[in-house]
Length: 151
Image (cartoon, rainbow, N blue to C red; front, top):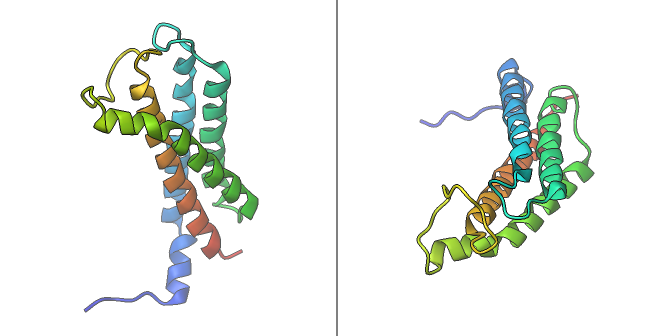
């Protein structure tokens, strides 16, 4: 027999201590993602690294982390979700061709290549695609929570 939660029980899960702890853990994870963006400007790893690209990823991951913390105290504005979803989908559309080439191209699929080069950008584009996908799921989870928060 399937147990259904009442509306008040459902809302209490969203506002529970466990969910707040989970939000803090997700915030820490996204702050870690932001922190590791510092190596994206290392010319020993990347061909013509972009400081702007690394800074934008750092900012984006940090904002998602901040969003998880803020959800423990208040609702987030709808524009936050719109901007975040558009940013995720834009990055996925820009890096998607690299993932496609990595999956179905002549070269063997890889995400662990040590050096990213202009001759073979598949690895970095694949990683960026999955980074944007993880961020999209996080933002959708935040939106789901945001709709259910009791203020």
